[in-house]
Image (cartoon, rainbow, N blue to C red):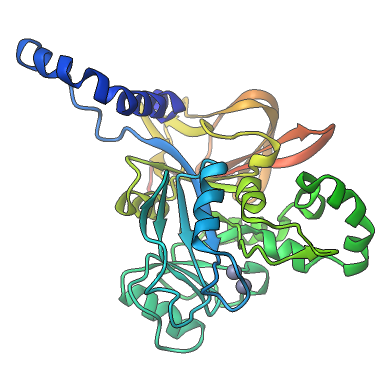
Length: 372
Ligand SMILES: [Zn+2]
Ligand SMILES: [Zn+2]
């Protein structure tokens, strides 16, 4: 099962699709003669990466066109974008939906502290609780946006939260400090977002605390607006914020249903792609002959272990119930597990001679044999 999670499956899918035209005739001939190839295992998953929380010209605070968004998605090789415009007359009726180029779009909104994902209509109620109720009623998914300002954590029914938000980092910047860094940022735009990045320690603490009592899926909020300028130059163009941090989903295919399913199940990790391409990262718990992926539950058995891999070397941290209980270096990390708990891993990596946050995996829930 571990093997089926890694990127090779995805490549086989791509190469297969690309070659399909060329070999179709041959395949039809072979079809009659050869016994049918076994169908892929039901749980075969691919690693899709994309952007959650994106604004366009339908938001009051962005002028970004849909053409610019599609082009930037192409350039940064995004598989999906979950649009979340501030509600306006056209924010849902004219929103990007379905496939455009290589990217799958779902339409939604940022409303009353929520990211509503895959919405059909605007919410009617006002306030945090009413908006959540309306999102759930129309079968949209709800994620907490800007957790640093959020207080209504005990409301039922939401799927997850942003564990990182680019715009929150920008807003937390001191204008003078930012101005002092302007020459460097203008000289080298790839430094713009790294130079404001702060490790999301408070969000992670809240996230870990919540996962002790309910399941809360962690995502990155790109909050892309393409509206921040220094000395007349945009420092947050779509291609910059899209390429900086991504949310990865382990999904059976690229479709609205499969995207929703991966999100709901927590088969998700967050990666700062600017510091290293993360596609192919895996983290599982093996216990009693079973394997649990991120977001899944498993029962603790003797010899249980966590096993994770990343496409380049990094410094690993194993977090159990909000506490760091293990560390390691390299492309992979394994640890024996001898107690029930909520386990997740973090990876840091080196970029331009500095150590940066890189990957945050969603937790795996290890239950005691008594069901704890
Ligand atoms: Zn906005
Ligand atoms: Zn926003």
